[in-house]
Image (tube, rainbow, N blue to C red; front, top):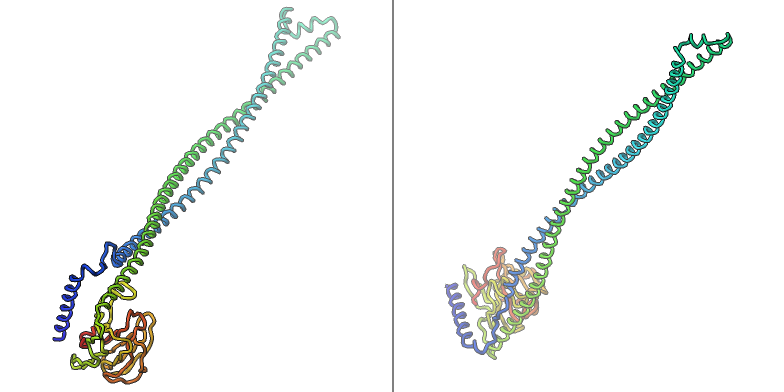
Length: 429
């Protein structure tokens, strides 16, 4: 029955408000415009934040990949430097061997010249020997006996014998010397030719090794170019992602500025609406509820905590009149003039008396020792102390507008077993 009465009152109020707004549509200022609401902007901000997180995650991944790629590049560069040094040393070695080969070629040429001169000298001696032999043959049979028999005396004979012996010995020495020189030259030439062949083979091996190293260096250069290109590609992706991050951050900043403007605009609209409602109030106070009015709920009697003029805000989600935005309202607001007495809605023990600057202002909490706790907020001041027993209807303090409040009123809350419940289910408002 109580709920039905409450809903009938709410529906009647809604219908009355609709009729009133339709009648005053031509004279009231419009509070709805084409600009986005703060809720829409907050939704967009949430989306932009998620987008920004995704972009930042992509940037982190790209930076990790780029760092890994750079490590590989450094390894390849180190390997390439070692190969280049090896190629350089082999190139120097090859040059030294080439110089050695040239030197050996010069030696071979010198030896060949000596050999040619010796052969020419030998040929000349042979020719002279042949001439002498031919001359002797022309004189007759050539023999030692004929030379000896031509001697005129014994002394001439001895002379002829010595001459023959000297000529023969000289020819033999000459021939031996020529033969020895020829053998030495031929042996040196053979040795130099052998060394030349070995050096030529070494040169070929070095050229082959150098070719392999050049191929390795070319492969290393190619890999390095590929890694650099990959790094540039990653860097391009990173630059693009960072540009998106910057754009998203700028958009987010713009949205936050837009949100601030929207909240300020909506708050001003709300204040204008409150001013308009205030202008509709009668000059003489007309109270809608009288303090102490009892109400039976579940075998318990609850009395109205204040003589209020208007029930200004119900339990549940609402647009916060001070901070803006849709927030849950954990009680009911009952507007009354400053100084109106506030009483305990049921008997109990005062559990809290305190002050909260950004919210409740001066407030009192009463523990009813059966799972229920009631709270009375925005007082000018309170006149009870913690631990004090209070009876139902006993004055706790006086109505004010301390804390986060736009005007004198009582914010009344009921907590049951730690959970806020709707006070309209217990007190008769």
